[in-house]
Image 1 (tube, rainbow, N blue to C red):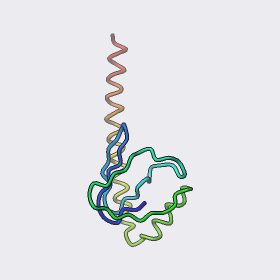
Image 2: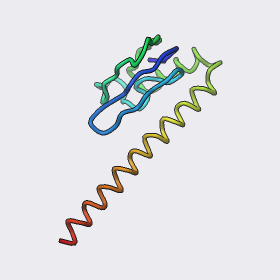
Image 3: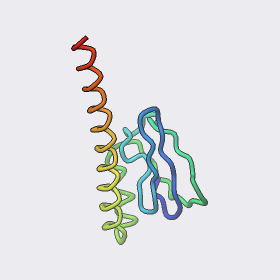
Image 4: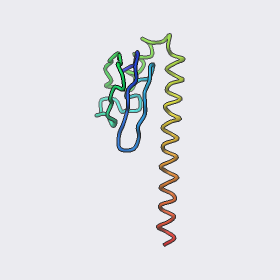
Length: 104
């Protein structure tokens, strides 16, 4: 799904991300698999829904919204950085925990 307007929260046990206009919901999911996140609209939201049975289906969204391609790329880059930041935080805390256990 492509967010035309509004905001959507993507959340699971490990992450909580706010997806905004021009985000592709489920971009980091696997095609034709159950979602790994729960999605909830944070405000009035309009989305365009597309079938997602194979990875190349994302091309349909980009083709449809090609004029917004710069926004899509920027939004995806920001989302990727946010996920990487959360991963680094979890890794750092896990390393500290493991080292604490090893030293006792």
